[in-house]
Image 1 (cartoon, rainbow over the protein chains, first blue to last red):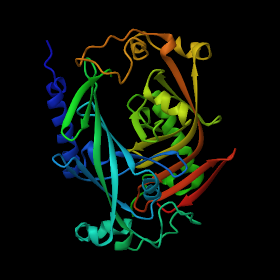
Image 2 (tube, chains in turn blue, orange):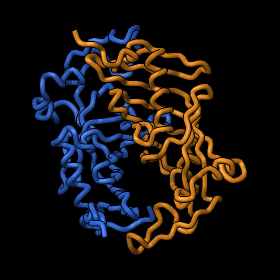
Image 3 (cartoon, rainbow over the protein chains, first blue to last red):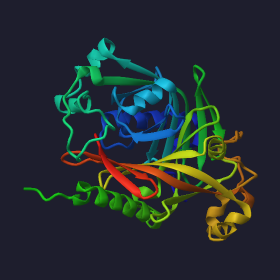
Image 4 (cartoon, chains in turn green, yellow):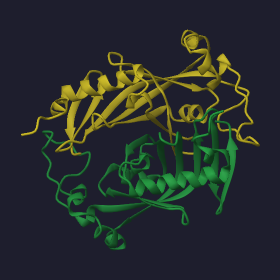
Length: 189
Length: 189
C-alpha cells in the first residue's frame, strides 16, 4: 500500500490550512509557485484579462492578499470598472490548484508611502510615469523607466472565496467561503 | 560578453514565431509549460474566472486553439454569456509570458463526435452528466463520473491578438493582432 503523499487533502480544514501555507510560502520564497499567481480581471469593455503578478503579502487572519502594480497599467482601469479579481495558482509540488475570488481595493499615494519606502531601489523602475506599460513604442527598447512614487499602486485583495482542487489518486475539490468565518464544503472535481 | 540565450526575442517576427512554437510544443509534450494554460472568462454575473485547462490543439495558419471541457462546467455558462476568453501561459524556460485574447465557439454533439472518438477511455470520465463539476457533495469522494459523450464540449479559440512579454537583460513586449494577417508592434513592458 502506498503512503498518501498529501494527507492534508483528505479533510476540509487541513486542505484549507495547506493552501494558506502555500500562499504564504509564495510571499517569502521567490521560487515557490504562489510567488507568481495569475491575476484575472474584467476590462472596461467586458473582456477577461489575465497576467502574471507577484504576490507581496498574504494574511490568513484578515483574509487579505497584496499585489503591487504601476498605477498607469490597464489592470487599474479594469479594477476601477469591475473591482473584483480572480487569482489563480497551480502548485505542482502539492498537485493543488488554488482559485481565489476577491474584492479589490486600490491604494495609492500617502496611504501606501510606507509600502513604497520598502520597495528596493532596483525594483522601482517598474513604477514609472514616463513610460507607461502597454504604450506603443517605435522600437523594442524605446522606453525609459524613471521611478515615480505617484505611479505606485497597491492592490489589496479581500478574499470572498477559495476553490481548491487537489489532483490525487482520486481528485478532491472544495470551496471555502469567508462568511465571515471560513465555511468549507466539498464539490465535484 | 554574454551570448544572448533568447535571440528570437529581438525581432517581432521571430518573437511571434517562437510563441507559436511553444504553444504547439504544449500540445505535443505534456511537460511543456503551454500544456496547461490558464483560461480566464467572465461569469454571467460579470466576475472574472480563471482555471487551468489542457491545450489540445494549436494551429498557426488558422490562428485556432482547442480546449476540451465538460459541457456542464460553469465555464460553458461563462462563455455563453461572454463568448470571449483570455489564455495565459508563463513559459519559464523561454522567460516568456504569452497572453491571448480570443473569440470562443462552443461545439458539441455530432459536430465533435470525431474528436470524442479520439479521447482515450481513461480520460472520458472527465465528461460526465451524473456528477457535474462544481456541484455540492456530502463527502470528498461522493461522486461517480460516468463517461457521457453528450457532456463533451470543444472550445475553439479564434485568436484576435497575442501579447508577448520577454523578460531578458532588458524586457521586451509586443502585441500581435490578427487583422487578418498578423501585425506586430512593440509596447512598453
